[in-house]
Image (tube, rainbow, N blue to C red; front, side, top):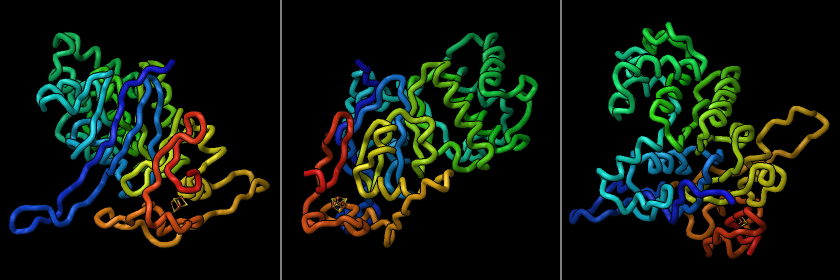
Length: 322
Ligand code: SF4
């Protein structure tokens, strides 16, 4: 039986953009709107969706960069959302984040060695005399050489900088790493190397990943289960093989149809979605996907579809499965 590491229940994150003269919110952006799912210990959970769907906001809630507007988060059975901010911060060490832009997330004035050493020193994980040895070990783990610890971020390529970001995340021996589009800023040739590195490190350190990405092709290799988000809501979750072989939600079907096929004999029809993603300030009243759905029915505009398990471990929010 798998063990749940993190359990999110009905999470929302609303940003107030404008208030009236009494300070009451009048324009509210619903970035995350009632999201529930679990991340199991040792798994890689891929979270996919277009820009603005709320996946990065959700990642930032998990690493405590944002507080949720409502909902509960449990980590190893402990309710983080019931803790005071100071107590919650003590869990930050266990939940780390790797950012999309490795250059923006590394202090340009610090050497690579100091960047990796900093969280070890702040969290008092080792005596000072052992920190350098640990930094060299971590550099080695991510495929960098010990002499590179005296260099600065600008002296490294994009792929190498992402390796530094990974080493810094590993430095505090986290249990969960939120990887926020960690390869989308890298050349295609480098992307596979970084993905393979993350895969190897997961086995070596027994890590759990929440892997956030724009498209289903990126998470295919690394994920055990995949969740698809649209306009602040989860629309489908399934084990990887099941999701790629049998996508149920029309949005997932459209995302999958966009992945290029290498074998020309296996031609598939591309589903082109019409229109743009509606604004999260004023989302459609019923199913959020109804303005772009090619299977829309009468009730879709009126009723919000319930997120339910339609076959073992396969969850979907769509009236086609009512
Ligand atoms: Fe399409 Fe209706 Fe399903 Fe929404 S509920 S995805 S509009 S068929």
